[in-house]
Length: 288
Ligand SMILES: Nc1ncnc2c1ncn2[C@@H]1O[C@H](COP(=O)(O)OP(=O)(O)OP(=O)(O)O)[C@@H](O)[C@H]1O
Image (cartoon, rainbow, N blue to C red; front, side, top):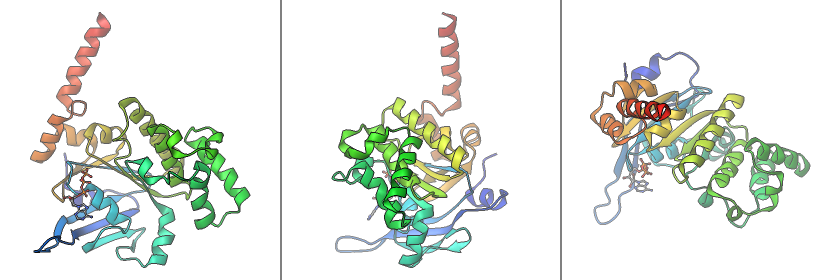
């Protein structure tokens, strides 16, 4: 049975790495009236070590805002973000810098998030020398290991972001996120700009990385099929609220909220009836 976010999060066992409670975010108003616009209306989520929580919802529902609030980049008006039991909602800069190692982010557009004028070597070296105070020699060895981890050739260090495909650029962004051995990565639509087969290879890479490092992902996507592939639990966001939380199977078999049902009907892969149709079609094809 599908449960609400609060009851699911409060009763599930295990250490909570990241806990968001009653979070409200309001952006400052524009124009003459200048009234702030609240876009998150009291959101609760919990993320455990090694877990992927998929956050799915339509455009404008507030998914990225929640990701940004966790990173300290959105105007929180009420509620808390706690990391390993410490309230970091309004953490001072020094504490945020320290946390920035453990909570990393991968954005949808790797080209926008990678400095186009810097070589891949420089992009990966920066967090290692600036944040971890590694020597340049130690950083070079670590960069080689990071590139190997994301299946890019060692020679990539001498090249610029524009010399890589979208999927390869996303691998570079993942390598950069991994440079600081994070415990949490906020993945904000990391495969939305990629074609289907590249999406699959990046999702497989993220899964492998989680299996070997135990990193937890908050995986944001508008695409339920993509989220289902990776997430242990799925939270459905609608107009600034989490309206439903459960496993991918629970959400698809017993959607409780009308918006979840709409989302399922719109998702050709995630909807169980469509999956059954596809299985029948595949079986018919196989039989010739
Ligand atoms: N910096 C900002 N200033 C004012 N309003 C903003 C700002 N960023 C986002 N919003 C508004 O907040 C709401 C939620 O946006 P958000 O980007 O979090 O949604 P989303 O679910 O991630 O959508 P998408 O998938 O399209 O990115 C939208 O109405 C958006 O216009």
